[in-house]
Length: 252
Image 1 (cartoon, rainbow, N blue to C red):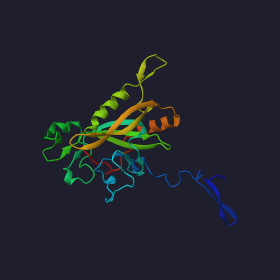
Image 2: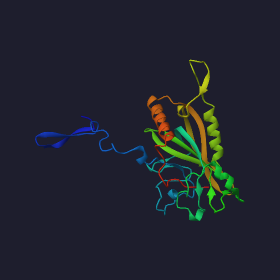
Image 3: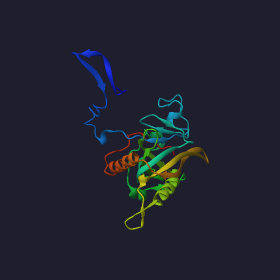
Image 4: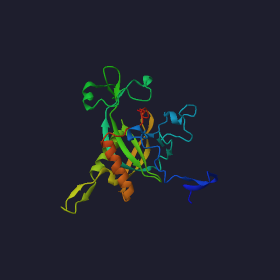
């Protein structure tokens, strides 16, 4: 017997009791829907992130600015070394944030839609402000699969100065094509057909912060990974899965 199926030392009622995780696969999880799951938020840590402050309740041991942090698994990734990701879905949102001193780790409205921009004016810091004093922070959302030893689903966002990287990534994805053997014509490749390297880079101006850097690595060459990415795309498109509430913060 392997590790999943081991004899238990004692006998019960004359029959040998066993542990068989494989035969009992999924038991007890039947009623958990995709909407009941918390999709991890892949956070790019900044010097002001709570996870980097040793005296803060949210401090994560070893966390440093420039690292990526999975808010559900609590795993840290070396931002300089980077991670491999497969993007499956993209959406631009327009969340409304209260003034910084009144924020509680989440926007007061997740998405006001693009039309809200017509109700904003830019202040001296070039921030898009509403008449009520709240701010609209245009946010690019990428649902991805982190392609590590064990593929993991996650959401990452780009905003403010990160929107430049977002536009570059979108252009890179739209520039991927496959040849249709039936017509001989080039057709747009699925977003989730490519693996990209995601790194963090330090930038500075009136202050120092970290932002994203994205490069194309290769085509997806694993059928299981491709199917997982395709299924994830369909679940997001169908509105079946969302990021864990309250996991996103505005660092800009």
